[in-house]
Image 1: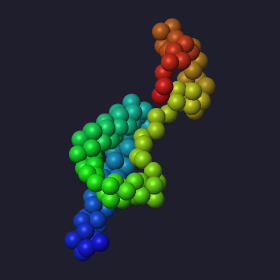
Image 2 (image 1 turned 90 degrees about the horizontal axis):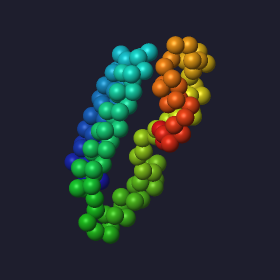
Image 3 (image 1 turned 135 degrees about the vertical axis):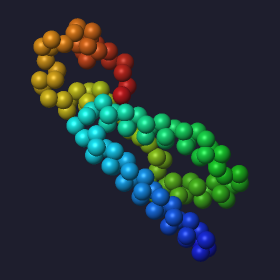
Image 4 (image 1 turned 90 degrees about the vertical axis):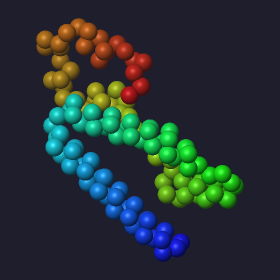
Length: 121
């Protein structure tokens, strides 16, 4: 690795750390507000999708050596980046029992919680 690449790598690490700090700060501000936190998670997922579908795809290797290097990095550094979505069953499992009781909740909302098993989140 050249000295220029070391500087770029250090600069990238510093920028990524700043982004992580900013995201944690926003999450801290939204603490206790599930709608705001869900909005943050959706925004992060959209950023992931935007980067993957534009800059990342445009930077894909154009020869076997570069492809091998990329695949080796993916394997050695923890695999493909993935933003996991919570499954509905797991989500319902962590809710307090009082949140699932039908005290004044409209039937339509109850149907969403009970009946729609096609949800994959």
